[in-house]
Length: 494
Image (cartoon, rainbow, N blue to C red; front, side):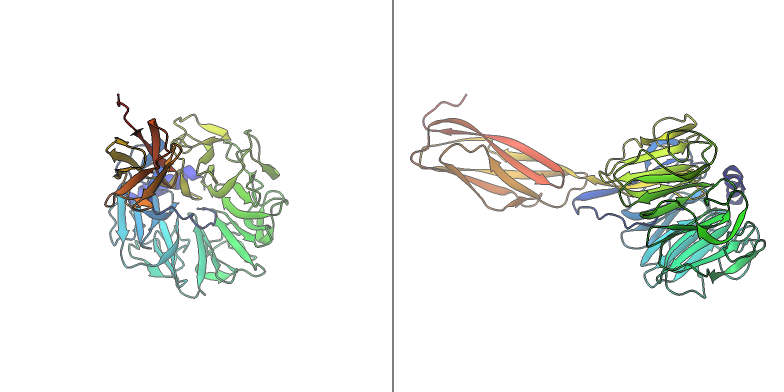
């Protein structure tokens, strides 16, 4: 089923793969904001509108999220307090708030806490809590049984229910039709549709409404799920795939169905894996990104639009620390906090300020410069980034100038005024001191509630004259300075 058909089904019902990776910890003085861009017909960007966005918009509420994952027409997020929030379409209860009412802004999913992982599909939702319990709600597929609750009835499921028969789980990934999950022991479980062998159990056709463990896969550190495929990344950096191989997304062997997991990528040293609608990208341990599979819209990010690609080709991305893959897009977060995007852009999914349809070259997402987490999904045409925006502040001196005789001392007080919610403190330093002048501080750090008194001491041999001293306050990547004019001796200050 094509992505556009999946989108249409999700829209009618209302009216990810994101590669594994722990979010980077933000400095406590940072302000956490989540931005989103791309497809927004059902409000899946969470900005209170249904307008497409070809540049990032801020998710409403300014909730401090730690993880975000995109489905076809809804989005899930984990907040800093380990609760779940959701927004977008809700025809089958995919938001998990007990209703079937859509929401253009984040709503709380009641009853679930201590959440460590989420995944959103085409109206279906999953979460794993810190005890390893897996929870499911929303759309149960058109006879797929993809919620894993024991039936394949496409009924409304607006309240999370526990998926039984599983050991403690570590990671779950879903699409429209099937689910792939990884337990804490590094083994893989699948359920849902098996139309193309995407359960990996050696059969094809039908469905499975309860989870079953895949034989032969151990030491798995990451998994990915698409409508017709599954992928698993082993600790040694090799990839195994199963399901449909019509566009070389599973590697050698040509078109057809691979009914059991087989070796996929012709490279090693991989640390994260993601799959969309036949497009696969992987992050290597040297910070490079490699891609293979369908490339009709430039979704591999290798600089060209072409027929399906295999073996894997390196993109121009370097210094990457996290990968996300959408239905027809790829995204990479680099160590400096910037984000690159490539692939289809008809709905602004690249966030580059344009809707030119295809871009095979990784390009910067506008306005994202301090990303600590990146999310999309196997069925999604939108993406999100959590940003730790360095907070800002200003400092002031009272007085700004002073005079003193050699051998004497004088004082000034430095105060801090915050902006963007700055609540912590900044380290104070004094530079450009003239010969014979020393400075003592009442405290090494200044905050909004605690000004710092700076005392300047001169010796009897300190030269007379007028001097410009610099007082600086620094926190995170923000530095603010204020000049102080000191006159030593009987010199008129202009």
